[in-house]
Length: 480
Image (cartoon, rainbow, N blue to C red; front, side, top):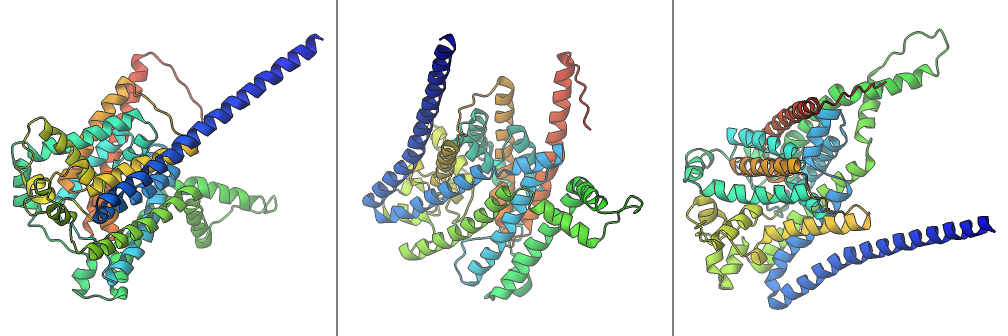
C-alpha cells in the first residue's frame, strides 16, 4: 500500500513538472511569435503613414534576419579571436572567413550590374589603430559590435551595458574639443579611397574584372592564407594526431612510422573548415543575406528616386534631423556603430548638448529621430531577431552582470566606440563589408583587431591568475 502511494506521488510530481515545462515552452513560443507580430504591425503602420517609409522598414527586416543568424550560429568576431588565442579553437574564425568569401562573390556580381551601394573608405594607418583599440574592447566586453547586439537580444546584461557605452563614447568622442574634426580634415579625408578593381582596371568594369580583383585577390586569397595559418598553428596538431591514429590502426605491428603527405594536410584543412557545420552554414547564409540586402537597398533607392534617406526626410519636412548636406547615415548595407553614436547624440541633445557643431553629425550623418533612423532600425531588428530565435531555442535569459563584468562591459564598449570612430567603422563596417567589397583597408582593421584581441586575452589571463592568487585558490588541473 505504501509503495503504491509513493508511486502515485512520484507520477503526479513528474506530471506536474512536464506540465510546467510545457507551459514554459508555450510562453517562450508566444513571446517569440509576438516579436514577429510586433514587427509586422509596425511595418504596416509605417506603410500607412507613407509608403516611402518601407525603405527604412527594409533595414529593420534585414536586421531581423541578421539577428536570427548571428544568434543561431553564435557568430561573434570577439569569440573568433578569443577562442583562437585563448583555447585554440578555430570554429568561429573559420565561419567568419567563409562568410566573407561568399559575400565577396555576391558583391562582385552586384557591382558589375550597378546594384551595389558599397563605397570604399579612406585607406590609412587610422584603420590599424582603430582596429587595435576596437579589438582590445571587444574581448573585454565579451562581444564585438554585432555580437553585442545579438547578445543583448538574448538578455545579456553585460552586453546591454557595452551597447550603451558604445553609443555614448562615440557621441562624446566626436564632439569633444573639436580634435576629431581636425583628425578627419587633416589626415583621414585626404587618404585615397578605392577598391582593387578600380585600382587595377578603372571604371565601367565587367563581372570578370570585379571578380578577379575584389573577390579573388582582395578577399578569397587573403582569406585562404589566414585560414591556412589558423590550421597550421592552431588546429593542425589535434587533427594530425587523429589522422595518425586512424592510419596506425590499419598498419601491421611492425609497419613503422606513419607519414603524412599533401593529401593528408588538405584533408586536415577541410576537417577544420567543416568542424562546426552550424557556424559555417550561418556564415554562408549571412553572406547571402548581406548580398541581398545591398541589392534590395539599391533597388529601393531607384524606386523612390533617392540616393540617401535624408532626401526623403527633407521632402517630408524633417529638415532639422538631417546634416547640413541634407543627408542622414544610410549606408545601404550591413553596418553597426554609427547609428548607435546617433542615439547617444540624440539623447545628449535632449539634455541641451549641441551635437551638430561638428563634422561627424553636423556635416556627414545628421541626428534623425530614432524612428526615422534607417540603420538604427536595422540594429533594433538584430536585437529582436536574436530575441525571437533565442526564445524558440530556450536560450533567452536575462543575466544581470556582476560588478566585475559590468566594469568590463562599460570599459570594453567605450574602447569599441573609440576604435570604431577612429577607423570609421567596426568589425562589420570597417572589416567585413570593406574587405568583401574590394577595399584593401579592411585588412588593416583586421590586423589591428587581432592584435588588440591578443593583448586583451593576455590581460584577462593575467587578471584571472592574479584574482585566484589573492583569493588563495590552489588549483592543480592535469590535462591528459
